[in-house]
Length: 266
Length: 251
Image (cartoon, rainbow over all chains, first blue to last red; front, side):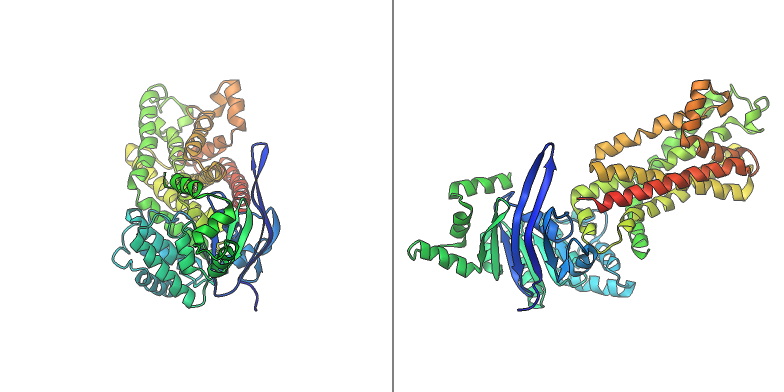
């Protein structure tokens, strides 16, 4: 097996909060192989986004090490940034630019000349089906349109590793399916995808392998099928879903998990 | 450098899409020019007031108008909005030099500053205000006002990066008002009371104001002009270093 697309060893993040130190991530070890769709699941506040933000150079690493596309994140963040695409939890778009301007801007910032940036913009607009809205400022886009444009912006430079932090949260079912199709297509072209999600069905449908994080530590890791088989075996051959694996791994009950989902909705 | 210019062009586009903000940037300082001149012109008639160098009191007040206009940049508020909306993180995850992220918005502030300072001076000319230092003086007035606007916007950007709060940025903007009034804004420094003279002497804005005023009222007086540029240069270097440091350690 070749060099991992993502590798983390003993990854730790502490925040200072007044006189207290908050341990958001407490020693995450993981490896993602090139070409995989890797799902990173966990309850709210488990450390998913913090881990992604460290891997994408947006947060400093308190302890441990991480490599993305074979490059040390702490030692050469610039090298990592050239090889990754990032779409964070909230679709981060410039509200005063049009979709076309935003994609062209990103192309230029990745070093494309004007003609190449323009051509790539047109390709991406077609890919995410935003040609008709391309000349409207993004402030007026619907949630689904913003997500699709955010995804397109993350793909401008054809990254080796694409980090997506809850890419379908808040989308309607049709938009979610569109994003799934898009992710499969991107992955089919060889891009490694590191995806956090709260939707277990999404993880089951999309991911080759997944890890479940709880309270800052990885508590399960494997293929969805293997994780289900392991739990089924422990339960005497009973049929189990990924929801059951999640609840078993995080020690949550269905009621408590439902409460957390409700909190997100509020 | 290309990333700086690309981000600068974006910020300029952003500013042009908020023309109401540009209007207020011009309107408030001109309003103060008219009001201050109207209130004090009778006290300081040009015929008997030596420090006016034969011009009206409006010419003496014009530097305050220019400095005030240069201090009304919206860059830091747009930056806070970008931080809150998540786009700033998107930019941080891209291989853009950190100094370009600082300078991009400041380049746009500079371009806006040239236009605003030029328009204010040109608007003042039909009202009898002359630029005694000639065309070169006009260029230096616009340049100095613009550089001050860029430096000031940089310090506001620093507050935005540190606090990530629009309210804090707005409060930070109020810091300028005491600095503007702890200057020889109504009379020359030597006519101020002793405590005010000391305060004005340690206030860097005084040297900008005196440089601009000398360019308007007298021929090129490098003894007055150079301290103004030195102050803005030194503050610019400090501002840039602090901003780059802040953005590099931004978590």
